[in-house]
Image 1 (spheres, one colour):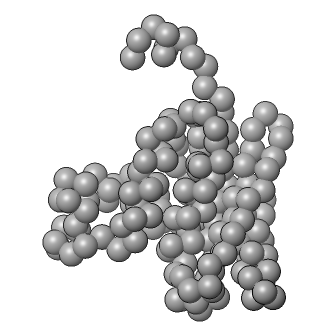
Image 2: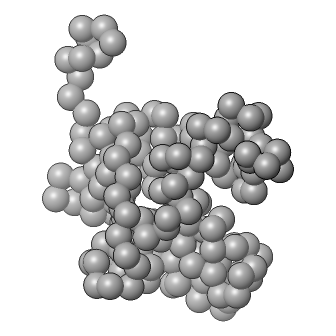
Image 3: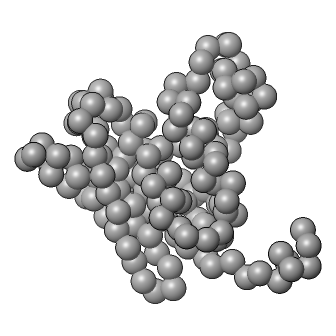
Length: 155
């Protein structure tokens, strides 16, 4: 790291993310609550035919994409799939050409690759919370994900 890079002070951002699926597969949604400097921004979206894991990944990807510059980011999620994938599994998948230890193609590979690219732009800290236990950010992200599914079903 150069002296110029070391002198840059990164903004600290927290992303609360969640995905949901009504049926698995089925219609699904994702939600993000972005917190920065006392301000908040909500994001959400939905797909007609998806899985819960895809929506969990999409929530994190879209939250990171919303950041216009490199930041220190805490990602708060109830998805052990996302946490384990980014902290442990992804290193082996990349070494194995995006194949699992059993030499099978990684499921949702395009989303894992997109998340890998987005996460590389930032200093990321992963925080797992138990879902549906009253964590305010997680509950809001869950409501946003489900609202997106409901809106999709009205179209």
